Length: 194
Image (cartoon, rainbow, N blue to C red; front, side, top):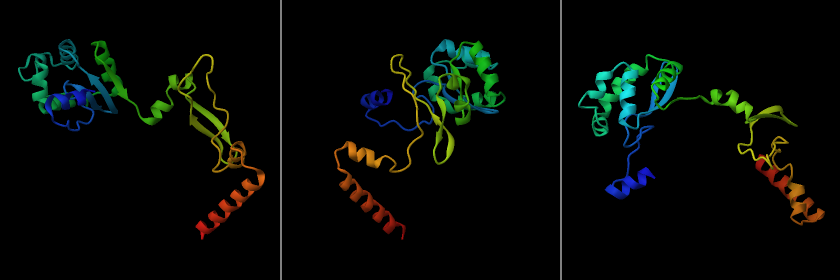
């Protein structure tokens, strides 16, 4: 929505900014010793708190950075300062420090960290089902948990074409037609394998 508004107001198509917010600085991901975190300083109080947390209280008063417009205009200089400081910390250290200063901050988790998170397991978002051909496999569970109809994963995904006969029968095809279609599919598969 922000990009549409920007286009409507200026007539210019917004450029890609990576994880940056187009009008709030800093509001993006930063690298730490062991991965990335996301930080948002969306107002002046948060900006001042970020400067205090990182040990740069005077940075909040620097004329280049003491307004949002200044931080936008001098983005690259500011980014270099913040990068140098945050790269000295781990994600956990940065998160603990910045949260103590009431700043929005969170880790950018790897896929493994997400899938092994205790909260994900408590919500049954990783489930193991036994596939008839491949044995036990892990799958992503059902995200919406409704109280009356919670949903449940009962079976591993079917093999290719496993339910063709049942689906065709449900669609009203008789047994002879289904047999003819299956033979035609088998013949086509044989031709494609040669």
